[in-house]
Image (tube, rainbow, N blue to C red; front, side, top):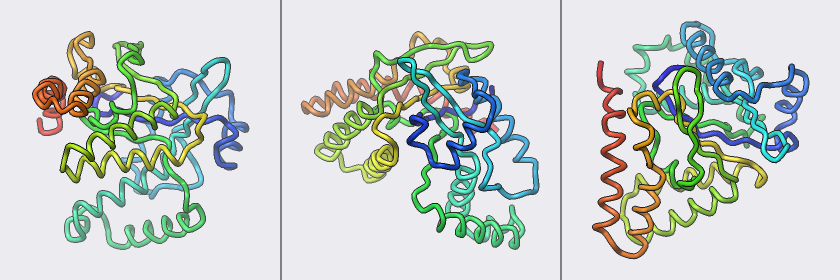
Length: 270
């Protein structure tokens, strides 16, 4: 498992998935409930596709489906690799600008990709990826979805990692409360936009779903996992903000920031 990314996943009941996703799951061999093995397959697929000259294919999901079982019931998280690839390409184009993008991609390939994606998007206007990922860290807003007591360590294949799993209803309640606190005490447009984006993302899924925050390979950059209480620090900071205790809020957030600053630095090593 590569060490650069962390993941936020939504697991839905089979009946809540799109017809095409249900058909793919039902026609495939019984999917594994080993999330780490599925992630390794996803990352391997990403590396192979990165070396390929072909554009994303929207009618297939070669990285498979994540599966968890809770209370004797299975929940499914399609990797949605084609859609995530398109959205990543769109973000890259928007961030780099036309002149810089032209240095990386032949102009004709972007035109074709844009036409294919727009055509697919018109046919699937409500499609939302079940997986979000971040590189060289875990976004602070992700921790507002989970509770400190939901923290678990697990064997990620040769090393220990951390994940949180929670009901989507609980995650939605927590982030709504977070938004209320932040709107009352902070004037930070980027942070509020990030939280609102998460609120909208959760609303796209079944209320019976589960949310998983997975450190995955990034845990290898943290050092002692026993010293990591990031969700606790974020919630402590929010609680202090809600009662107007700026000193306590600052202390808790600085602990969080100090822990992840060293991990974030790996992005700039080269």
